[in-house]
Image (cartoon, rainbow over all chains, first blue to last red):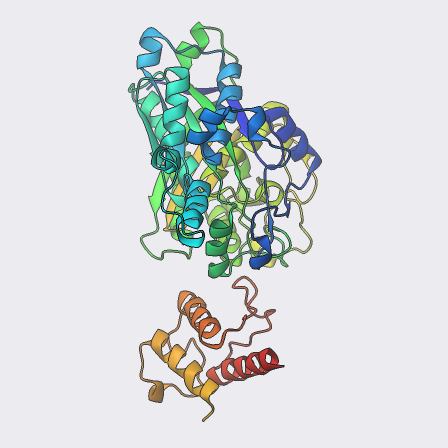
Length: 402
Length: 87
């Protein structure tokens, strides 16, 4: 079977505009969540979020580009530029034909929809800009990456809510492992922090008004974030032959469905996804040193996830470190697994485990080592990254050092 | 029966798929078969019907200023919120 490695990583998220900035923030346990700065915020009851700060699209994209790039596409292109540059890959000839883009997003061009519904409904305008459809469509980010870098193989977008980017990266892994592709630019992006995006989430009454505190007994809900994480997945022999730097090997992936409830997670579905990823990677649970948790900070997720990890890991559950970086960058919904994969790469390459910040009170139902508040040094060889979506669609990735 | 009480019972009955006459004040939402999604929908209907804000976070129902332990406590809380609204 062909092996798959990661040769490039890029990001823009509430913790930084690049991978090094993000690693620094994760090492320091910095919080990227703050007061939302969006139109009509005073009509929201949830007024915090993980916004990308200090970002001015005019400095990155010209007027014509901005007419076609929704904010989620802009984030994707910024992160893709960093990832592809790091990989050193150039897409031409056969490599271009055998390479593609598989991205995750949940809302796609939600800011574009929000702005233009306002224009026609609230402001009573009778026309909108001619490029609204190509700007808001969920596959636009994948298309623009393909167009900008000449990627001519399989390209598509996956939407499985909060598990979108893990599902996308899993598809990228499979495409390369099966021989259908040589390299795939993969990951995910999300930008839902607009009035309509936050208002919809408010209705579910699962959002926190003050902070995201995963696994802490006093947690009171999730906090939304925005941004993108993009990676270059590449067939191992191809990467080796060109002397590429290798960040990690992707060794396992599993997808399961709860087939139960549209919002409540199932311990059994999560358990099967975690054990499925280990089985696919052909490793025992005792090999795993770190799990990047889904860890949303809701009562429902955190208890279910800890129970699932305990079930799969048995005695080893007490030794494995499990943290939720959502405490720092918020829940990037369809882009979250991609930004969280960075914590996995940092653990494997730098030996630093990103913390769960905001942790204040132990919860007996989440009694695992959640790496509270401060990053920790540890030498580990294998990691897992969990994502459990609304809709009961679960996706878990397994990575190792080469 | 106060208007508020009658309307709250109607809303809960709708979520429970029962006739309002089959809803007793001492029953809990659990007894009536209203799950967490039914509860969130009921709160939405209450807010829309009375033009009030109901403080309720599904992550910490016990800390919310909205007592859902029985139909009677829900009615009492809504009556209080409506009265506060009028002030």
